[in-house]
Length: 80
Image 1 (cartoon, helix red, strand yellow):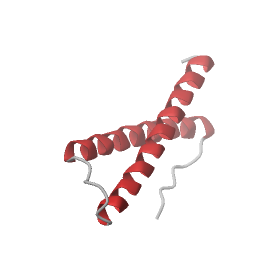
Image 2 (image 1 turned 180 degrees about the horizontal axis):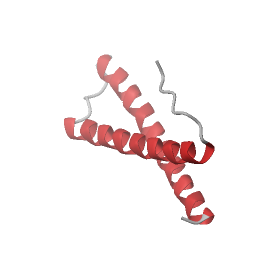
Image 3 (image 1 turned 120 degrees about the vertical axis):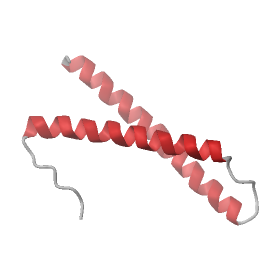
Image 4 (image 1 turned 30 degrees about the vertical axis):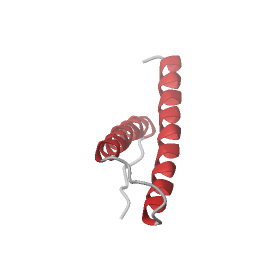
């Protein structure tokens, strides 16, 4: 992969993470509104879709980190 392709892939990942972050925020606010009785909950299908996106982007972020670890020689130190 060339430097330009890698840069484009990283920008795409960052864009998707940014969008997902916004969607998570909306989900949290919606959940609070549901608890307060102001709105109906999201459908189970919408929650499943959000969960799948979280997993997919989490895996993409882990893959990116593994590639960086291979280049830098750092050791993967998972959180306790």
